[in-house]
Image (tube, rainbow, N blue to C red):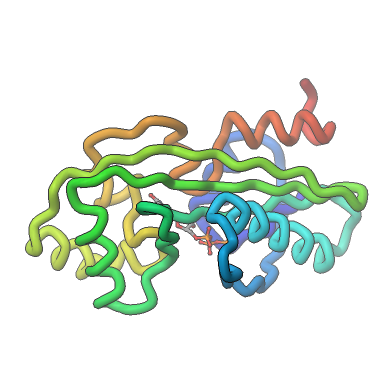
Length: 187
Ligand SMILES: Cc1cn([C@H]2C[C@H](O)[C@@H](COP(=O)(O)OP(=O)(O)OP(=O)(O)O)O2)c(=O)[nH]c1=O
């Protein structure tokens, strides 16, 4: 199969499912439509990435793609555009709960199956020094919500309710079930 993703985290997680895959790297514009609910947006992006990946694939094999967003009080926090944006995101996440939504899509035989997983994450209160020092590590820059639970950002997370692998970018249990449903993996 193919994984349509440039994310090293998705690559590592998919490896945990134990099936061989090749990469395709489609470019999909990530732009939320006016009034598009976050739930629909994240799933649309995953589907767009999978279809774009299928259009590039050189062999007729299944194509898997995903998207992750952070949602705070109905607002979508994507990747920080610059330092101030990243710092502002971390200030907003400080001492509060947010939801991480990850959608996965699989295109196979001209059909697309998709799913969405939601996880609740609680941050401890962050000081300005915490936020400054974390930004300076470079870790937040390419991550939805401006943090990585699997890295240095993990020390800000006081509680998680849901799937850890979904927060990192690829929900293992649900993705395995999706691949089984499509017949890519045996039941
Ligand atoms: C919240 C959170 C996000 N992330 C990452 C997962 C995703 O890689 C990234 C969100 O961006 P995405 O747009 O979902 O993915 P991507 O651009 O990195 O890769 P691609 O579209 O090519 O598949 O944020 C973490 O690694 N850890 C976390 O704790």
